[in-house]
Length: 331
Image 1 (cartoon, rainbow, N blue to C red):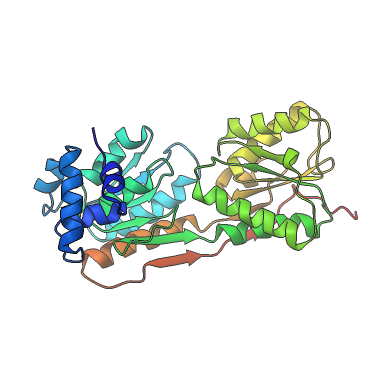
Image 2 (image 1 turned 90 degrees about the vertical axis):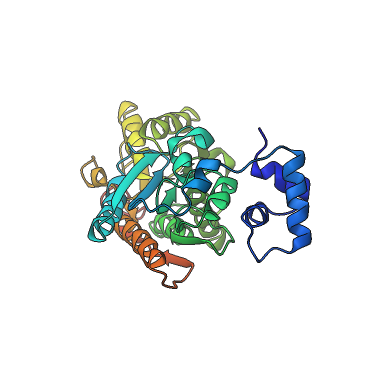
């Protein structure tokens, strides 16, 4: 079955242009509209009929689409969205995007089952997101930047956060700093990695690929990545984990190998999940304003539903939380 991406490729236009053309947007020229329609006809591409039927149906429901509902990171975010949604007399549906294009989360977008949606799901593609934005419902993304006037953005300054985490380790005397990353498809992970590399460069510290380990934002992934780092035998002086869950898994791996934190190696995490202050030792980390991100995203949805104008882009700052997992090398 042909997709909107196939139509865009055949017509030689952007995906958003296909959506505008097939939805009779006045911003598209007649020549472009004709070219898109011809491409769609040649590929036997059809818009979702259910989505068209429901285009003007009000559901009094907002969707929050997440990569995973099980991680501790999401609880504060969900609470922020829930509080604002409830205050406006709407229902909230939070669902996982596991399954990608075939997931229930994507159906909420493409079949217009909700009045607005908030996306934090790296496995929902840009193409699907852009297509959904043309259906008329407010759409706020938290994990990427897309150039489209129908899409609004709330993001955490992850480059700043990654930079501060790495700089904190450097200022504590560490010159050998590993990075254990989340999924390569995650925009947040990419931004944190950029901050890490910028800090190394600014402080004239050589990047070493052997200390750049891929993982997946889970506790099990952090455990496996740390075991791989240990297996190389030449441990760095410190590790920046791209999220706290992986750092917690790393703590377990170090414990099993009788490696003391922070005496033998320092570690820093990212997110400041609730568990981070209760592990041994308590985890130094970068705190994200998770509740505030969720609340602001929901607030934007209701502004847009009310016909109000709002900025397209908001960026929130992170905060360093000092605990006991980083040693000062001069001590």
